[in-house]
Length: 318
Image (cartoon, rainbow, N blue to C red):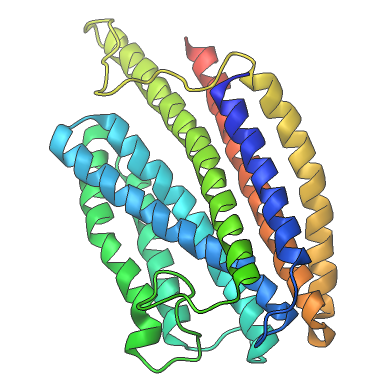
């Protein structure tokens, strides 16, 4: 069994375990069953913070070492972070509708989280706008460093300003005030989501390696046509693949399964949305969890499809 398969199985196992714990513990004293939404909302926010922190680290290391493997790390983590930031906002809107009665309000935490999302969307857009690999890595590294200032502002906004949002659940000043079962369920979810982050990062870095390999081959062909050296220019950092040769078959199989499940979950989300005005607390919990898993499946499907397509392009030009 490969290391990648171990991570995948661990991610599924821990996610299922976290789900069982989250749905089996008793009611929270203040919020009742609705508090179970926090077991998907808080871990999503945690992964957004973690992902952008890794983007910061990768950006600094690239500028220090000029090795493109760190740029791949930073860019891959930024994309994963954008996904979980968007998911955090979506789950926050569900929470707001169930507790405040509105899908959106100009609350400091909500607005600043949206600003953070657009900052890192700008990071990804910047990378797509610069064709030169080295210039792209250098300029996006500076934005990856500057963008990190968003995290403390978002996190402590509920302390610094008057807001509808509750105080931080984790990383808060003082002790964490929550029931032991609630704490156990939350940390189980945080651990499971962290494993999911590792799996997504390995996949996303694989895609970056394939994209770099494709650029190398195309650059070599262009140089050959121009009468220059035929040897492909090598970028700093290894482009060795992290997945084994059986990956294409698994990619197609995983894509088909994810699409089928995703369509079912999307239909469930649409059905629940039409009845959102009359949902019970358990209904809101089911709604939030369905949105979470449907979004994750959609992102995994899109990521696997991009890997499969890029691998095929590399094989065609080799």
